[in-house]
Image (cartoon, rainbow, N blue to C red; front, side, top):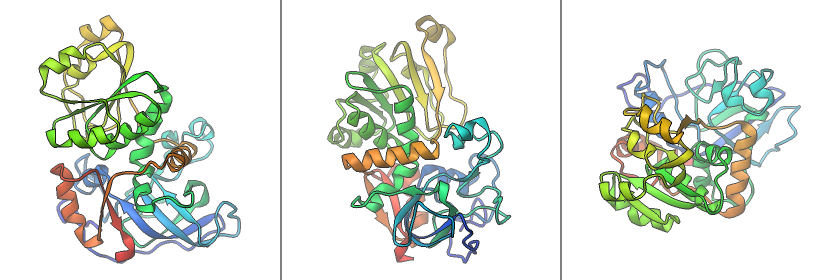
Length: 340
């Protein structure tokens, strides 16, 4: 639990609500560390409310179910991503876009808890109670720790690849090879696209090639950037902080799109003349609805796609946060909550 933006995380006892008729209680087995957990606990996206228990890449074993629950039974494995509730009645919810709920979605942590009051507490904990609708079925036989990041990093990159119809023969670029970016590479390769990776870290070249990337380009390689101008059908920007964007917009074909799934700050350097002439598109995407999250979990399970992870114990979380910021992880930390 974080008590403030500067406190770091420390053990604490929290209370979970009683299991209601539509609820599932899970013993948390694994919880991924998303870069957004760091932004949130450190109030880097604006002042947050505390205390805070982060974590929205949760894999757990069902230990109790409410009387109305039909999707799960005790002993099943379930997952919880970034959402635990929404209004269920607006046009977005009715179209399986709960993440865009017009009346206020409930995030897995640091959000007003409409059921219990106070704030929601996330997956850096030993147990959680969630309404059945917002629990994802985890297929048997998968690597559970490696599946945890699919519930955020996976859906965040899968959704734009689906929406912009990435497919065989298309040229897809991934900007940034971290927790999000490495999932974008794996998923785009699985769809048959010719994938290029743009990174600032030369040491990640080998990993990108092993994942199926055809080419790895350093951001400061001006010759390569000029050679690749106007050649991409889709670019997925998975960089967690703002960056100069026009050098990548220049890589798009006419009518092609760069979709930002990482930085939530203002993106710098957009040139109207250069982009308007070629009718290039800049868009954004954030996670996905519950149905699409189930879809990406099933998609990955069927193709044996998991995140590349480093498994840690709860007492290593603060160190892991610093290592993520320092780009010292390939490519996602996952906390073994059974070691708590």
